[in-house]
Amino acid sequence: MTAALLGLGGTASFVGLSYSRTLPDSTKIAPGVSVGTVPVGGLTREEALEKTRSWARERLTDAITLVAPVTEKKWAVTTGELGGRFDLDTALDAAWQIGKDDNFFERLYHGNKERDLVITPDFKLDTTKLDAHLAKIAKAVRKPAKNATAKMDAKGALVLAEREQKGIELNLEATKAALLKNGMGALADGEKAELIVKEEEPKVTGDDLGKMGSLLAAFTTDYGGSPGNRKANVGLAASKINGTLLGPGEIFSYNGCVGPRETELGWKMAHQYQDGLVVDGVGGGVCQVSTTLYNTVLLADLKIVARSNHSMPVAYVRPGRDATVAYDSTDFKFQNSTDGPIFVGAKANGETLTFRIYGTKPPERKVLSIYTGERRYNASGGSSVTSYRKVQLPDGTTKTEKIDDSSYRAPATPRR
Image (tube, rainbow, N blue to C red):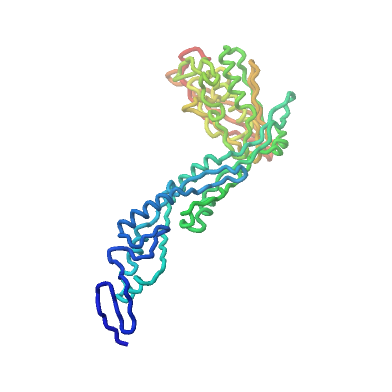
């Protein structure tokens, strides 16, 4: 059938058929087109962009709500706060092309056929912002595991003071994967999801405490001649360490356990060593506590992680057997190198300070003695000494091991 085009002024006629409709305006988006829920048909691209931007801003206030299990605590964050955005440019490009890249007859068809066409903009999320928000939530969710605690009764036996508690921490990767399981686009309308957590088992349980019947070592030093302030500091430091439980492999930090020595925290001014001199300082006397514990640890045959000697010899142990501490610079650390938990008990009665370390079974090696070699003096009056440990091995044989070397300045003032 032959068709004759009769006019181009917006009216087209065909042999046997007649249509009288306005052709689509090439400067505007075709009728019946929407981007998201925004009708953009008949709008210029600039007008459509303005309208869809308003729609997108409102959509980015939709919240993604994360709910903690058990407690039902909620955290809500908008898709906008997570760096969400809608790809409006690509969506508008698609809307603009409708009816414009077709031939004349298809354009005529698009312009006269009544229909709706919805273009959904892609939703994209900044995963680095999602990670940052999840990390903040993780801090709030985190509940460290707590070891069971014990104390010594009047007869020196260990008794359970408090049972253990499981810890909880956010499983970041699993939570993120659950959120994105249906793709980023699924988060565009907001979403409610449960946080995925994992439990952390305590390293020492009440049952473990019941097995700690073996005294690994004990050591005592005397501080009965100390001034009142120094006695108070020794008692305070000992009380902070008393009852410490360490699981297998755990490391004890003296400074971490005892904390900063400040008057606001109950510490008093007393004599202490500083740069080879005896001076008054807050917390004077805490080094006798670290030294007494150090010797107990040596006798228990536990692993020494960090130890430093004083600048000058001290009066309460032989040279080479001391362990100094300073909160901001020098720590004493040891590791529970046994295959079971250990308990550290401390008792300060105003005259003597005693540490006892209990474990689940006697050590395979038995420490027979701790001793120091001959003291070596230098021209300036300082000295050095080497400490040793004699142990009995499981087969009954004995051997001597070097523990450490210690160097001291010549005393410039009376020893404390």
